[in-house]
Amino acid sequence: MKRILVILVLLCVTSSLLRAQQKSNLDDITGKWLMTEKGYVDTLEIYKQGGNYFGKLIGLGQPFDEQGNPKKDKKNSDKELRSRPLKGIVVLIDLIHDEDNIWDEGQMYYPKDGKTYSCKITLKDKNTIEARYYWGISLFGYSEEWKRSK
Image (cartoon, rainbow, N blue to C red):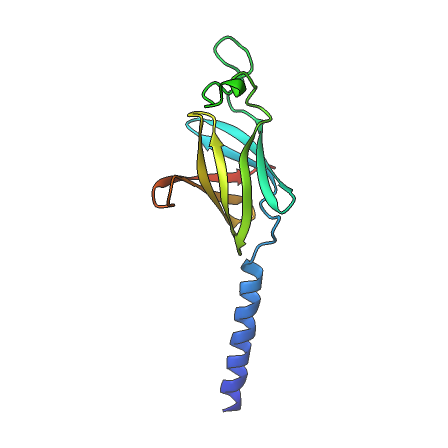
């Protein structure tokens, strides 16, 4: 009976330690991330401001247009912003830590179509993020995998 009790206690302690190791630090998503899509890579820097997380484009896989000029935010719905360079704009907005490895309730501006989507980020491991973009409910969207930049 004592052996069974000792084994149960050890299992509970081990299980608690494993769960604690799997939980992320709130700031684990901060840093530089490589977003790969259709043959080129953009670099997003995620940072914390106040209690929320934001991300700005710090590197573009294709930084120049056909004329050799820095790419602009041409598809923005706000005509005033269409002449701003893409590099340096904040595209990830107001993400909050939701639970363990999940940051949610934010938005992601997508310059390729000029639209803003709801965004949820899951930290799969310390070097991998799954970003989910959607309208309405998460079911109607798509996911991307980002890798931490070295």
